[in-house]
Length: 286
Image (tube, rainbow, N blue to C red; front, side):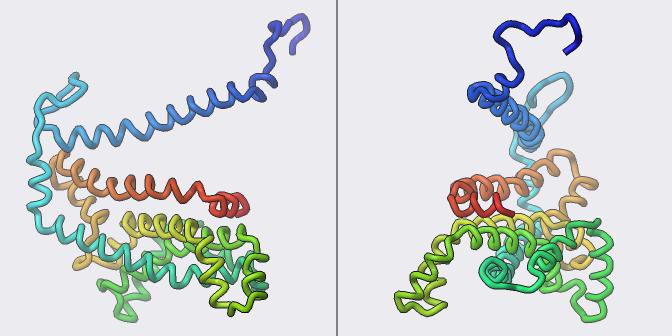
């Protein structure tokens, strides 16, 4: 503090930070600001999707209509894209789980050589701009006849989903006390029985969270699908690019709402599992 300056009596910056009520107030202000930052664009999309007329300076539409939704659902391209997206995402999630759950258990329980290096390798696809990776994959896909195929799109989506699933399941398995599994083994259970009866039920919240994130990552993937899936495998995010450039703004808003709705619903559903003690403890140790 500068010479001659005097602090206000009874007021201290340290006190303001350490006081629980002040911390709660700061946290609530931050959450409120974040909600406004995220909520206003979403609210604007919803309003546009029902707007018959909306001109400045009106805050809300002056006329309301559902014709934009009718126009979207009457378009066979949109319906096909929605069906394809909600067909690919579950397949990607299941295949990712079949790989990531054993991998997560091995990283958490077994003495895997270079474990940290291998875990970091899963982050490589997300460490650099993906467009270069997708172009390289497209060249490889062309050589092995996977370009413009269903399974080519599925395998490409798994590149991103393996990161979420492997890291979250590894953290979840690490947070579970290994003595519980050892006790089941001492009671006569086989390694597989001990896993399914003791470890898996405790790890289930973390596996569900990882599956939800993998599902959403597959549902929102656009660049790679555009490169390796067109012209016959057009998902919702890919089709959204053409809707924005070729259709009226309310139509694009409708499609954005339809694309955002599953993400919001699944993220709200994931909140109950994120509160699990094993998920929280595991994520804190990543």
